[in-house]
Image (cartoon, rainbow, N blue to C red; front, top):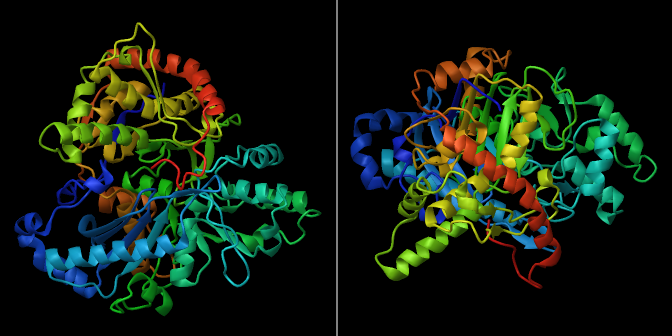
Length: 593
């Protein structure tokens, strides 16, 4: 197994962010104004001045279930001044996972309005400008536009697994693993299927790239997000020119209008200026008209890149695990892998360094569904409990479960899972007659199930001899100290370190990237990256940060290994469930994510 010197979960401790938010269980919330005001009083004047003078950076992230906004002080990016959020939900329409563009903008405005209200409530200041802004979102997917800027087909998100033939053909053509969710796989599947919209295609991008484009007028992407659209050449930190030429040649006869250099967004690295907020963009973000245009933007990034920033895992021999609707591990490489592995994507950090990514489509959503069921049971049998209390009780009960989960298996497959070769998912709990069905073992099986597919992919990296000095992780499921991180340590046979609390995740990460842009411009406007990103994070953001470490328990390592072997064998039952149990006909939406 991978054996790093320390495996860290969480990032900069921001106590003001930690109140529960029942609308997004286990996601970081924020305290009410009343509870924050007393503790904030000693620094309120400084915060007010920073907001009023625009010495702040704004980060916005479009996650799978929430749109978050996070405001930080550019002179101390570890200090979060205000937050905002808006819940949203994807739809399953015509067998495609999607979000409407109307929901993108109404949700963004709601999250921004929430942040402004939080800033006013805490600090008595209404932001009118910022030193910099950054946008982050779920990676991959497919947003195609015509020359007039009209969306040609509904947004196809990363969750869709309909691109198998295209991904296989591109993997053979490029000699690199091209996952089903990558943007180029979505484009090529549309070409293979002769979809009419391809003839009108003028530009395609990711969700972060789309929002950034509408706010600034620039069709650009950060290199980390771009690396989930098309392979990146690590030497140029741009799309691999040889592979671009190869693809254009492949489709030249079928679709002569396809020229990837025209269709793909421009690639930028962290610290480079990526445009400014236009007047139209300011009105989209803040319909009240208070926000002033002209604010610089950092390159838009994907959630994997902002997760790396949020855990200070951008240097070689570092990595992180992010657990949410999906779960994925990012490991910054010292050298290329020796073989192609369908379990591993090669993407980049926001600075352009190669990263091995183990991406699992299914993360903690099924765990959240079961917790919601127990929460409802508590509500109808006694005094209702808030979501955090239910999670805390169930997670701690899992510690009393048997180390191998008592013979139970839990598959969290709400959607297809490419790593295990499934185009669709069916959440499944399986046990044998001789298993021990206790609440503790049931909850341990659910937590192990979140890490099951990830562990299969991480064992591939171990076989490649990938070495780690540090590995970090973040996500709401780690907030109950000593439980999920302990089981993750057992799954990876590595020590796990935790911070006292979680914070704002990717929204905070992209706010830090925006602050990095502001710092770079102030140090040397012509040099962009005058300080490399890793140094900036270590010295300006994470300096002096303390973590508690929990070693992998031998019984957990052995128990998870037993569980994983059954999990691997039991995938036949999951496949049978997909083949034999159809989705409900005419259901307006897919399962809640």
